[in-house]
Length: 375
Ligand code: UD1
Ligand code: UDP
Image (cartoon, rainbow, N blue to C red):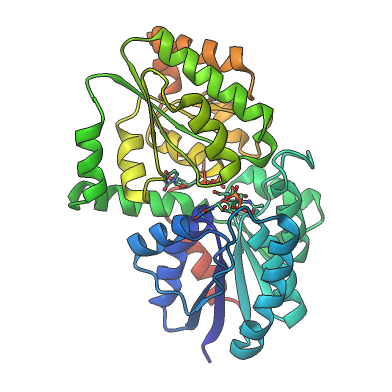
């Protein structure tokens, strides 16, 4: 008998990282797989659904402008109830550490379904960084029955929390599956957004790509980040900083206010995934507080400055291709200028490596679930 899967996600990064898993399960006759999006994100989620050609079976369409964690959490849990009761999945797959992840795992547990956590075991061991993601993934990890850990390090974290090793698979991160599948496509496709970037960006300049959105950086942190970027743009004639700005109003406001007219800085809307991957490939340095970008950039051989004090992804820091700079203005400026002006350091940090996966994570996850007896 086919096993019934419900794959639930809600934000841009979850969608990118779940898309290859949706494809892998949907083409396997041992499973009946449905997709439910909470719509925690809207425009940024739809960009991903379009590129990967995923048509959700259920769309809860929950996003509200300037939403808060309390309502979002409650809406996801109560909104999932009829969907779980109607489809009655054997397994629910959640991803990573968002409010969708945490709330969907609780709702699925209530329904009696087994919970499978993709990108399990990442920890900073600091409740407030990233906020609220560290707690979201810890809760999801305690609820989950099966854990797909991307690396040995994330496996070790789960073992330390008492999860039996038979319930954990070191799968690699599905973000690399998505990246590998997309890098090939991006080169061949005729994409309007990529064509527009070719016209708008001066590629004779040295490109720095920036993204940022973390809640713990909202307020003072973002002001310091923007001031640092402004200083870099002013100091370096031959640099072009490209910043696709996240749609969260708490990010948009300071970024457009401080950097709207800054020299050498180009603010654009969030790019669809193929255009973002294309641009990352053309970039000299990546500055980000994003989780996913920290994983993708080393696979493309791009050095990353991470605007956080701590990371749950220590593998690339240990390999020397990622440096943590926090939201300290001086550190961001100094490390960027060092990377721009020190060839040896640049070479060391632009080593191409794949600490987070080899592009086969989804096959491993599907194989693991194929061998599982029905609950
Ligand atoms: C969320 C996740 C975070 C993840 C990030 C990825 C939580 C608590 N936060 O943060 O873990 O790293 O997504 O980007 O789960 N907005 C839009 N359109 C969109 C998306 C967002 O307008 O397509 C605006 C809305 O005003 C929305 C606000 O951004 O209310 C915040 O969205 P939310 O998902 O609550 O937080 P993020 O900062 O996006
Ligand atoms: N990304 C994108 N367009 C952009 C910026 C990022 O498609 O303009 C992709 C990026 O390739 C990565 C993911 O979005 O896969 C990261 O999402 P985000 O930084 O919003 O969330 P996080 O990974 O920090 O949870």
